[in-house]
Image (cartoon, rainbow, N blue to C red; front, side):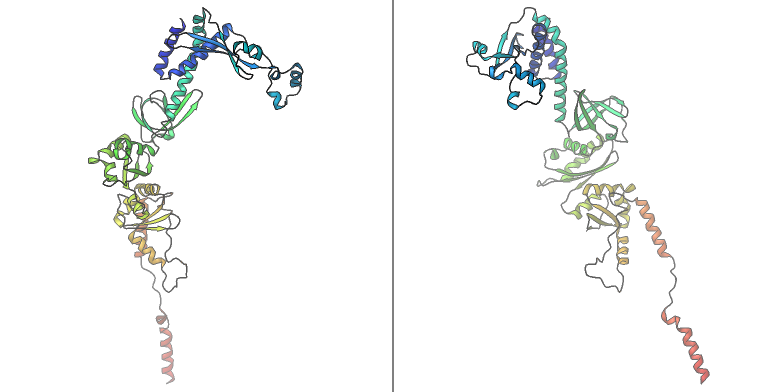
Length: 451
């Protein structure tokens, strides 16, 4: 096998792996230079090669540093350097002369009259007759190893540039809870924590996945994928909705409980563009495509607003909101009709929890009747309000805040118990006039006896 045939074989491998031609040339030159040095060179030599990929012809040369006497360490200095490791900076510039690495200025000028101390002289080497066969055998493993390294580098750069994007992959195998997907030039990893609990994966299944991060490891690039990350929703909408991909409609915020339900807030400054209508599509075609890709996960699309009251009211959709009160410490009190309370809170508090995540506000949902009763209780008759004292007590957010939302059924039960207790008969209070009645009768009797 001669150099030309070997290069042809290597080039074919490289073309399949999509490695740049210049990279192949560099790899092959390094390998055949190492092969030449091993067979014909000496220790300490720096041998380089130049390869013509078209003809297969190779040139070799040896590089030597040009020095003068002032740049060479003397015998005395060599002894001192061995005894004292700490040397002066100017001494460090001096070299220990090695005829394979260095050449005196006088000798170098015979090859190049213009050369100066500190420059490198290139000395051409003869190409041996049998070098083609020997180089092909010696350099084969080196070249293949270098190509594998180059391939890993190409794959790493390619997928690193795709971080934050979604790609399509085919499930290859499942090991230790992790799902491995064929994503083209490598296998991606879908870790357990980035999977959707309600989804079941099987070999051969095609999935759209979000590229979470790409790490460069000694064994090759590791591409970590996700199906649970909230931004996968925005990327899926970009694929389905031209107005979003063209930035006519923006997705301002996403709140997601993967596999169950999500809320997205959309906004548009483009005149004549309906952000919700664009995302939903004609007859719901666009949002249905996204829901289908996510395995049936419900998606609420609401309109974003700079007005926090309006934004919070929109976020609690599909419930109808009567009033929103903005309170200190990033809290909001939302009042809804009695028949909308369960819908506003949602099953296990999911609706209000997602609304809180979406808007960034701690939301307390109450029925209008309950809110009015609490206001009446706070107002104490006959008590003068002190300057700076709030007439309205701040509601507790433990039940329906983003951190600990209440169950709608539990809240309804609490309201029922409260009404029942209000219906019980209260003990009668004796008035001041009724308490004095017996004393008056006794006094009247005593007066009549005296008479």
